[in-house]
Length: 243
Image 1 (cartoon, one colour):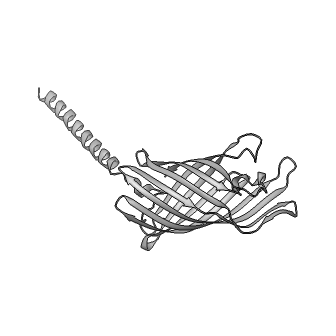
Image 2 (tube, rainbow, N blue to C red; image 1 turned 120 degrees about the vertical axis):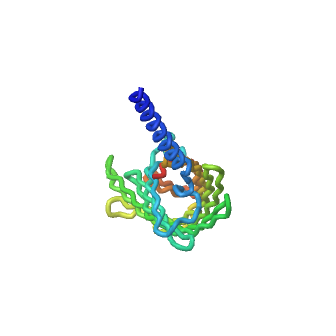
Image 3 (tube, rainbow, N blue to C red; image 1 turned 45 degrees about the vertical axis):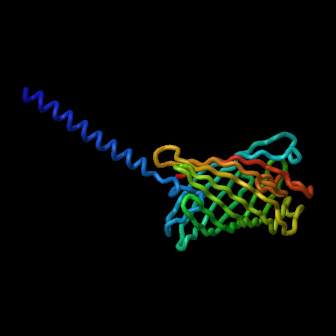
């Protein structure tokens, strides 16, 4: 009988320990703060705090540029670095192999209760090359992105509206050693994006976004760059994992 009682005591103790660990794990899970993982939602980072995300965009090019609708995935690797006084720095790499954009820029963040905002100025270098099917073309350009983001948080969901005004500078396309296209500095157009950030699994977050690029020059599509003096709506779907 004593052996049996000791056996049951051992089982009860094991169950209590298991329940305690489960409650602690659940408490840690419930303490997850999506704001601390955010990449788009404006918030104040701690100095030297670093955040990463990895994802991709799906782009549909205008019919005037290509004979059929083409959707091309653009890989996106993003990093945010916190600075004092509400400032932070964004570093972003976008690549489509033949088209690449390297961007960096400061932003000033502010937040009041559920609302937030940041003002930013990003500068990007675009480099592309095509050496297939008889082509030997390269593109180099600098693009400036003054932008504004407005955020709203509700429970574990973050909503961000981001508006950019791309300014194209020092754009040129070369075929071999000959420059075939060169444009003057110009306001390229306007982009408006809406992003939703939420918890995906345990400590990992996920971003879903939709963006409308109303532009003359769209850097991923430089091989089909049009000289038409008009802007086009270029829809873009965005997905990324908050690491």
